[in-house]
Length: 152
Image 1 (cartoon, rainbow, N blue to C red):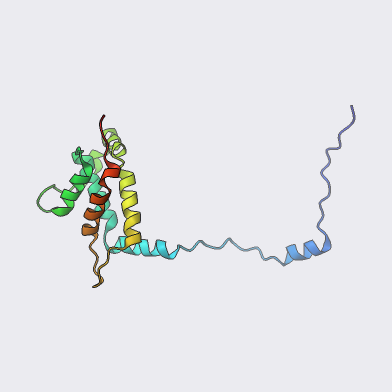
Image 2: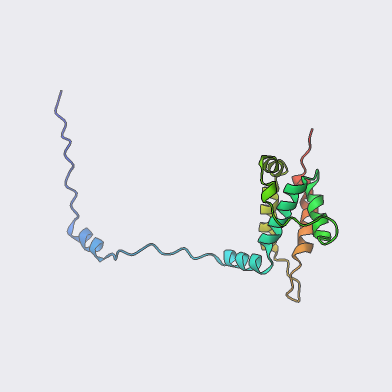
């Protein structure tokens, strides 16, 4: 059997390659700046307390586990001070049963699509005021069929 030469070949740079390599400054990678859409989204969500609204709605669903979660969300949005009581702390409802409920009814997809669509539509009227609740109710009604779960 022939002897194999396992030596690593000398990979020296040519003179012009070395000159180019030495001229390239070593810098940290450029920081990724958020896109205008991401900035707009963050500002809009912060201004209108969207995270708090979604958290509150998720808590209400985890607590009550209604058969029709979208109708329940709409009812809560229509009259949060009367109808369905607010859920201030979701901690007692964070269990496997609640997780299974949220997954069964695709609540994470529902809110994800809702938030993305809201950002695209930016529900702001001609006076510059926002009707997030009105937009949420309308969007939920229009998209309800896509998130209905049958038990059959």
